Length: 86
Image 1 (cartoon, rainbow, N blue to C red):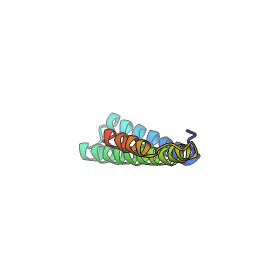
Image 2: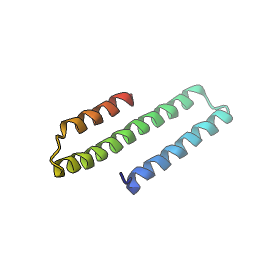
Image 3: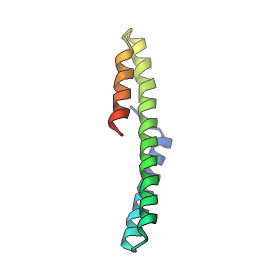
Image 4: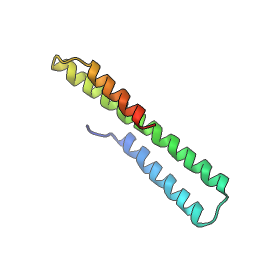
């Protein structure tokens, strides 16, 4: 799978967000603020996982249809990936 610029930019934003959390910890910021930023990071990671899985699923289903394969297994695999990520 090829990852487009939008997905890569999400990861770059996440990287910056996590660096910011580390900086907050090093500067002794309040626990509530650190947790808030960590929660925001987790939400961003979850959304990125959803985007990657959904884009990959679309690609896999198209490929399976072109090859005359059953797409049910591909969909189940995608759902399992999402469930495991939680």
